[in-house]
Image (cartoon, rainbow, N blue to C red; front, top):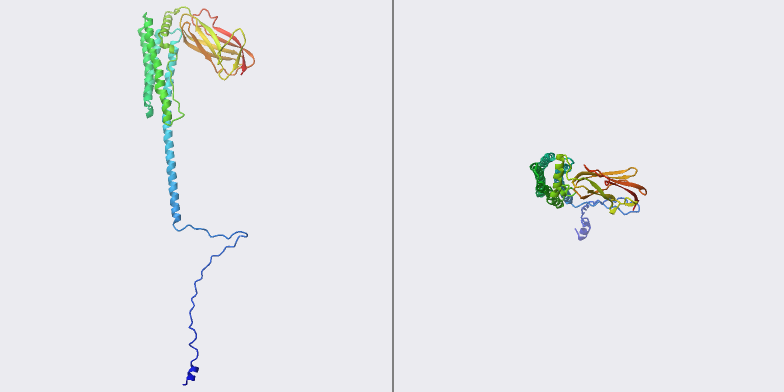
Length: 384
């Protein structure tokens, strides 16, 4: 073959570029866009927390809930403890109040026994013995009480005060028993006054060693609104004086013999004053009285005789429609002594109209002259 032939045979069959197999790239799916709301921006896909955050948030929530429960439990326990403490003090002081009321009743009965007209010495002795037994029961009740810890000393003061009252009553009864038929009234009266002084001491012990310290202790313990009972046994402080007991013995001796003890008997009206001004009312002219929230009247009563008098009733009457009638009693009064009787809480009064105010003092036994036992006053009440 010639060169020419080679050129003819050498065609471009193998000169074509080799076939390159094209690999198709994987299709990426684009997120579909939601149609826009007319006039608004496109919506964004929701933001999801990173992987592992959700359990952590749940743990934090559980911890917060646990803390809240613990705090509520603490408050609940504290509240229960506070209520329990308050109830302990309230129950204890309520029990003391019952004992105090019972003891006060014994003191009132003592005053009645000492001021009963016609009472004999032997009868009084028996009454005092009975009162001592009642007061001993109060001691037993007080000893059975269980105070909160901070009031243990105050509890001992309650028992001690009541024991002083028992001792005084027993001492009075024993002295009267020993004085039967004796002529030494002055010496007996001195001993009786010493026994009566135990009643005054018991009132001081109750006030200074129980009532006042308990009032101070309650706020320290966070206890409020719980009343502390008071107790006053001796209603008439004059019973601690020998002179008063001398006249009591004279009256008892007169009752025993059926005679007049101490000579002349009598009582008299000394004055009537309007309160709170203190103006003395006149029986001969019109008295204008200004009405106030604490309006009242003070009546002065005098023992105008030579003997001690007991159980004197004093009555104040305002003659209006409806009438006002008030009565109070003077337990005991000595010769030439003046005692004041105060009348308050008069109720609804008639204003701008003249009315009559009367005061009447009940005659004492064997009183011969009762003309000075009463008085009438023309009054008119005005609004201040």
